[in-house]
Image (cartoon, rainbow, N blue to C red; front, top):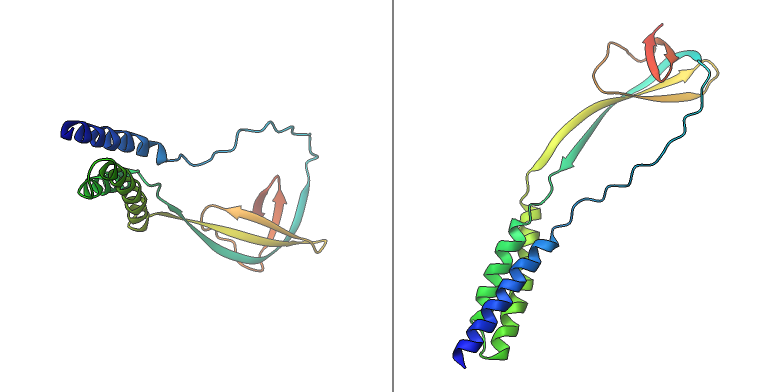
Length: 158
């Protein structure tokens, strides 16, 4: 009888550990969409730089799932120390589940921040009074007040 309880516990812990790997979810990626591009007339506008903003974005690193696995195993081992018979098996499974959640939370809280990306958002007031926004990946020699030419989504000193 003692062997059956131990075997049940080992099976429960093994099933729990293998199911925890399914807890790691890949980030959602939208399916590619078909874009129909209509011919656009070549348009050149002029204006003045109204504002330049530095934009900093930081990506958060993706968790590896190791925290959930380690936490699940530790929780199952601790849960296995409680009760006897079916109660011990239930405590093992419950401890594994709680440990996985706690381990995943600890891993998420202790992750290093990802790299910082810097870009610039240049606001241009066109001659007709409208504002247009351009994303520039690096620092340019443009300054607020400079006259610019806008052509095909690009800025050029004018």
